[in-house]
Length: 553
Figure 1 (cartoon, one colour):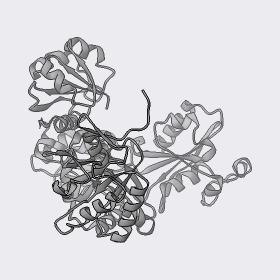
Figure 2 (tube, rainbow, N blue to C red):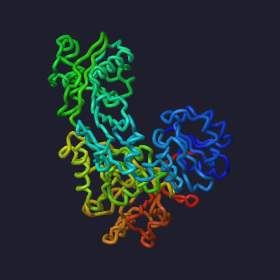
Figure 3 (cartoon, rainbow, N blue to C red):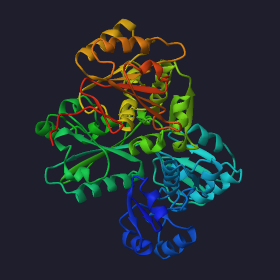
């Protein structure tokens, strides 16, 4: 979202600097009017009454108007004023509240009661009588569900929609008009295969696709992907459709049996079909061709229906603790997932991002393999699963085990990694710039790595004169490893070598201490600490730990 924060008072200005958005101070009414059409949302540090008077004349359509969130001058409340669902105002209020340690105020009935919002289900486009069916659900009248595709629904939603009343929720990729008491949920079940000539225009291709869908009475909202031959991957006519493009080689396309092969196409590109073969290949195992090849002078189109949604695992690094150190990509990945799974405290770290429709799985520490297997199994059933980790998912976290197992347990499941701010980087930022030159990260936990291997790595880092960041330095059961690491490092470093110890970085109770390698054993260190041991060039400048890069003034 493109968000603009506007403040009036100095207190509001100070609060706005804590938000990762463009900020403007003063002339709030003029600014809002001038920027109304070029931002997605406003955060106004203003009383709600004043905000209402400013934005009321500008409101036209909830699907096009920007969201508005109000924050009071003390930073106690973040109030979703308008655009709650359609424009993302409720989610923005929660985000602002997390960043400012404020209380989110959301009055949308589904959000306030913890109910599932039909128009916010990830992976679905809702149309029809959304308001009427939602009111019925809130009043304890669950609708009937017609899921003709047997498409996976969130468990919480399926439980709420098991009624026999007059209201209905229809899950389909067919094009259905408006009917009172009926909501249509269009899943991403269709793949459009498209072949084009070099000179095909975006208008030609879009018109052919629209005509093919209309003739088959299929919904454009259910088309999730465009598939084509690799030589057309970057064709403007395909990219202008606004959908992801998957491209296949002629050899890959030639392996697919199609109902309308063409010798002309075979001669031209090396495969008897582009549109039909690409649609079926991108739609995956069990797909069916629901629209055979349609053509105009410059393009061909076919449509395939997926047998099930494509499963996906997203490994999400949440950062060290506070939401202000969490990336927008991480927040989006958690918010759009069907299932959120992780070690209990890490799930709670993402608590402000969780939604009523999501399945949330909290597992104990030490169950990493079981957690990875469960995530892949859920993704294999067609769900989008977010595996949440503290720091970065690829640093002493879940990314490695999930990727190791994915090829064997779930070969058709896509696995993505969303990076996060890991503990060494967060700790270094609080200390100054101790990682300004070459450095190494070593975990002192010998639960999964033999101590003799850890010892060799420590000696190598010490001999190479690398700054060393120590993870998992001490626990209740592992009390001697930090002292031994200190002894090894002292073989190559002077006792006066600067050391920084940061505990609970980015969280309430954060503690930052500067000491030396000689005095390290006298400093309290536990599993919530990151220890950074300087190199021979590391100094303390104005109570900040610095490892020079070598620049000269």
